[in-house]
Length: 498
Image 1 (cartoon, rainbow, N blue to C red):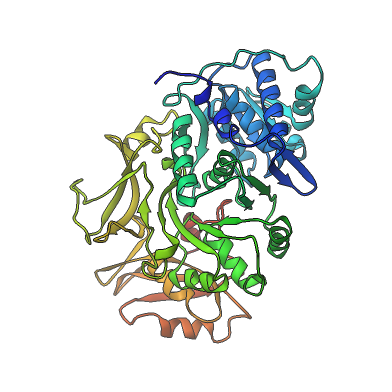
Image 2: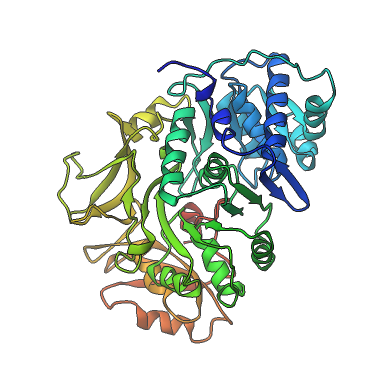
């Protein structure tokens, strides 16, 4: 395909909105599409004038704030590769990401400058603080009026190095091209019927592929995004959703469990709200049903995805929610899904095996890690590592991660199935399961639960809920579950707790 500026992801995303239309809202700040386009073009020109070259990796160390949006898009517009640092980045993660990606420079939000300077003291990376970046793009004569932007090959050139969530180990840098994001974004805009009238509340980290996808899809539709830098006070988030007239909200399982248990969500009414998106892990079916009942006039889209497939892989249509409760839905338009056995042979409907995916939004592999790439990607197919099956209509049913099962007395049961059963128990806010060796059953389940109103009676209720063939070694009531920065259960930490 001929390379031209229209294939640059940033230009493509910013092409839909009217100059005067709102694009990004943050507290008392508003960026229109005109503001955003001019700032992105100016800053991208500055990057190139400073000698940055096409393909250079540029770190983004900042929270969900307008600064992130501007530098993210400007980096991509200049033909560079954005490398967002995940929330909660500490010195170890900071150094590991810099060394793994060989980034040339890191753009740093002002609140993190002191830490970044200490951590990068002996690293070969330049740091550009937020105030310096802002000045560079705004001082007259600093930003070149005419810059020749490098042409982008959308199928080969990287837009982002997106890190996996690390829920089961050390995160890897996924190579995401301009085309990967364009295809996934276009599919979701089409599927969700997003328009310039849509406005999403974004509480997910922009460094996380799901959070970035909310930004991508709404910009491409000419809509707007209300950026939230913290979900620490969820009731305030609901108030801002109502005040800003948000039409949509996206979250991972823990997001919705918090909203249902710790806020007045079920008592509120949001006149503008028309959809919810859920991905980033399996929300137990009883919780999905509770959420749908709490907001009966709002469409709920249950989605499934992976970082290695850019973001989303499949979606359950809201009008089939009750009929297909627990399903991950149908593959998006540009994707093909198959279920295979251990020998790689495709399985018929109803039989469970590994879910594999291919299509233009499936990434090419991990950055400078050919061995991991070879294990995960084969002949164009992404090996998701998810154990799944498809029904007679092609709907996908995820049973769990291949390594997230417990085998009790010869019967394999997924953690997701156990957690769904426990989540339906009165008094349980959240739960997570792990496996432990057992002298009689081979393996047994260990449960970690967060309760409403203390431990009294809840543990006994849980034991009565569990089927007799499931061997439960212990039930531990905890103040909170270990989670990744993206809100998923941190399975590796659970194993340490066991």
